[in-house]
Length: 492
Image 1: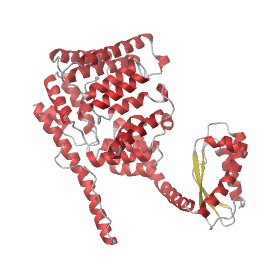
Image 2: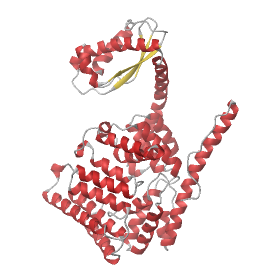
Image 3: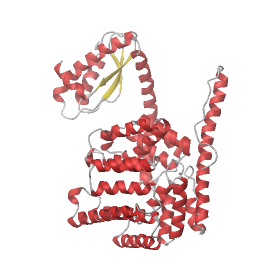
Image 4: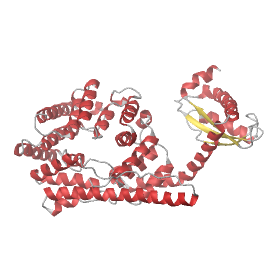
């Protein structure tokens, strides 16, 4: 890494407003400058290490990119490793991986260069045929034969066996996998585990080796206690290799047999154990592997504020990564945070990540959603701040209790019509001076919406005094409902 610290600078609070603006601007500029300098320094460090190992300028090109200005820079590292393997440049691969393993090299965005290189060694690129796989396996086995003490070659062979096993299984549901597919899947994963057990006897050990063993144990034994033991061994070996958290949480989701809430609890406990920026960065890096923009995101119940905090800490320490920005823009959509998404998209510009969005139209569609929804969400935040200020007063708490009671009466009248699962939700109700409904902000969606929405609209249209007169006109109140409270509401 560079000789300077890539950290968030501190600021002081001066007494004069003009000085505050001046100092704030200097702090912001310093943060941006440090992020840019860190990104350039990290890219330069990798390029220097590559030059010491690789003589062909064509092979060096893919290792000289800056992730802060080129969204494909990270992917190019993976492709370069695959290219070196395909051309049987085993000495160069061992030299490069040994170098970045020793230095614990990271690119902008906090990704380990070592892990990226292994990603290029574990499978044929693009859409491999069975012949491509046979060629790939022969190459890695030839590498092991030529360099029997190479830890990189052994780990690459083990991970290749696991990916080859997935190839035989296919990507469908378990009931769609053929008998031969399951046989090859299990056979190749067991071979991977044996290769890793042999690799444990080599003089050099590798962080990726422990990650591969985590994966192999899960695929071969499928035992929760063994998975945890493998995770603990890995973290003891290299505490900062955040991919260990990714593998463990991936297989502790409910769809793989984990308990409800287990992943969120684990991530919070481990992040709190690390503490500070380190814990937040781990939380962010792990979430990148879990949040998929699908139904399982809701089940995970992760903390979006902590993910954002971890991303900011990672960027401040390691520099800007366009790939990470694309990932965050996508995640912001999953958490319905248009304001954050709009900020990320503005920083991305046209550097969209094909691996994340697949096609430009999906990237642009998400960008337009963020742009259109941002003013609405900003207004909602303003309302939330007003309602929270009201709640902080004794009068506000008493009035909120009266509004809550009336809202629960309305909800109770709708419970007999609810047929689906009710999620947690909250609304903001603006009450006029006579107790009428002036406005409601928040989604009237879900099973309660078709009943409750028309009731509230009817009261609004008739200008009925639904609530007691508020402490002041146009008074904002927040109402929350947890599905767990519905039984109590029904019993009232």
